[in-house]
Image 1 (cartoon, rainbow, N blue to C red):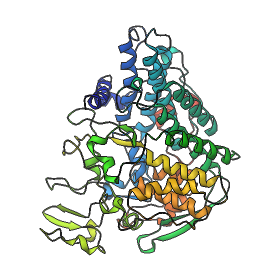
Image 2 (image 1 turned 30 degrees about the vertical axis):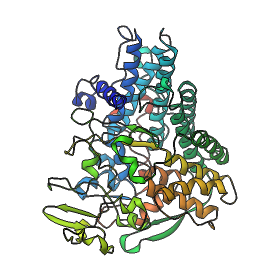
Image 3 (image 1 turned 90 degrees about the horizontal axis):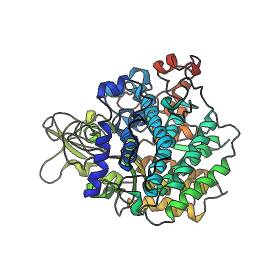
Image 4 (image 1 turned 135 degrees about the horizontal axis):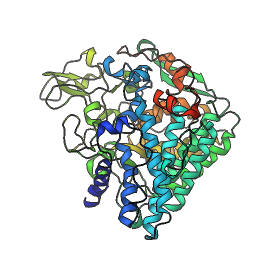
Length: 536
């Protein structure tokens, strides 16, 4: 427990490097320490590395804004006042959107400072390697978010204080990906394996985490560049929900890329992780979210929060069915169509969705057709279409149940994702899905008490099954929009849905494939030549 507190404490300490929340939002910070009076001791190196981690709980990452990207998908809904911007395809109407770009570049600047200044330090090899490996990882991590959200972006590898160019032009999509791959390879080479004491406190980046992220990058390139193929998705308007088949398109910037090469690279990296045997799934899906299991086993990377201070999040407040005082409900829920996508005995639906809750003094149940949830023996629940919401329960186990003061860490990477990535990659490398693909897929399914995938699935059916399984397993973990975009079906799926049961607009146009670059960046970076992403 002492070590777990330590990893949360260093994120808290990193926040203190930012003088105030307002300044963090208003100022563009290119460097956060001065090499002239810092980087003297091993403790300095560790503190600088901790400052890079800290950005995970900035507004542009997982404190708020980055996970709201998942609202721009077919599985997400909420009240109009909350979903009317990002959730309705209007990111410019949301005040926090520029923070995504800005805070990612702050993390990059901090990582660059570490890389420049820690390398020449006379400190222990273990601390030096770990700190440099973490910096390489987070620089790649930031650029991976940026390229998926904005396309090719300016690549900055040197801090401004060390002579880095303020006016950097955009690199191409593939140039950006090549830098990401290079950094992750460097990270994997420097970092230590999970369980090695040189890795440090629970929650720090390990060699296997870097390998898993390489797999995710390779798979994103592979699926995005695949020239043809069909994918079937359960979607559509509430009255027309069902299975629809869409022809995939190539993601802009990935034309002509050898997709098979990248699928195979993804397979290799997944197997490097899974063959260690260190990341087996917890026995039950709900075990993943228990406080004692944070930063352990299946939870390969989390954005750790800490109640009662600056490093809090509010996943519990946003996603819970009803707060204990009955004053309000959460602001994000899944559509009823998502719930229909689960088998009834699947623990991700049976226990991972709130079927009964009390709000405003009245007890409601979800969903209407599952009448067994109408009573729990002590009280009777009514159904109300206004509360026909599939709230998730995965973010409910927190130390403090108070609005905007929670400690639920955001799950950035779980090994169930790695199993599903492996299943996808192996399937795409063969004419029919081999046993290895079914084995990885069914690991995730049977853990949740769902039936195994039908053995009769062909390659295209298996591809579709894995995509939908990712939607079931990783619901509200900031994957759905990225999955739809990388397969080239985001526009088709969203426009087929058009509007959800709560009247949230889901129809999109091509400009929604990328986020708008903040106008402050367009105006200040001459290298962008005054140009924004298409349509913005």
